[in-house]
Image (cartoon, rainbow, N blue to C red; front, side, top):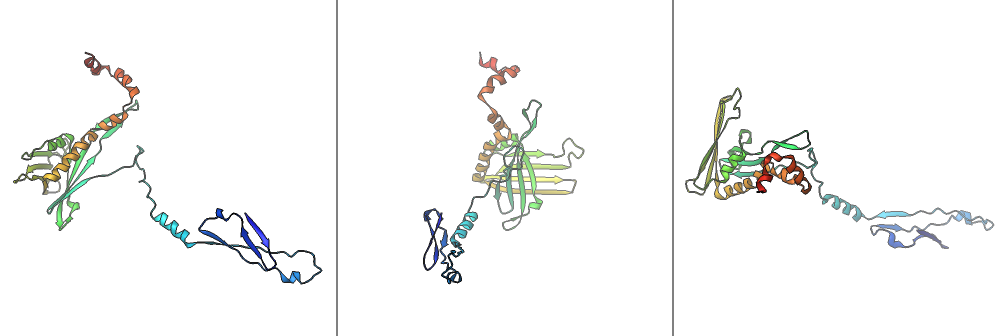
Length: 271
């Protein structure tokens, strides 16, 4: 609230309860001179009109604080482009060596909707291996990369692989189609001679484009341990079992058991 207190020399603007103003704003009182022409005549009884004005000055620190708050404010979460209501997340793990690089990325399972409103697993997830040959020092030619998809069973083979064990996987992307046999992919995992890790060797023969390329990369024991740990963690998710676990509700147990009597689980546990 503003109160005006006129004086003989000037009219000044004062403030009642100044604590309500922000510390960043200040009001400068302005001295207003009365109209001397209207006071020259002593016979004039009409009071002279005075124009009051005030200036509001903002401190520069206010704008600086606003800019800093905007600069260091937390960024909003990623935009949601999926239909499930959750933002999509992409992860991977890479191993870089002198002659090649290997990137390991999980791929989620696929589900289909049923008429009842439930969902059914239609395709298990997998782990995608991407091999890229070296193009220079700490440089890799990802345009020439070769890929290999590990199924859940193949992942289990790598998990149980011993230090002196080896395994081999064969894939034909066109199996059961007209171009069957024209593309051949063989992934070999063999122990290093000194027993400190494994060799990953991917050979791809593509008769469609007359290409035969082999990319190999040594994986140390520590690096292989990290891969095995990641495989152990992701396998239940590739099977889609996490979606089943998240959908379990206490009130649905009796209804589910009664709806599927042919499973025989109740008879087995009641013995």
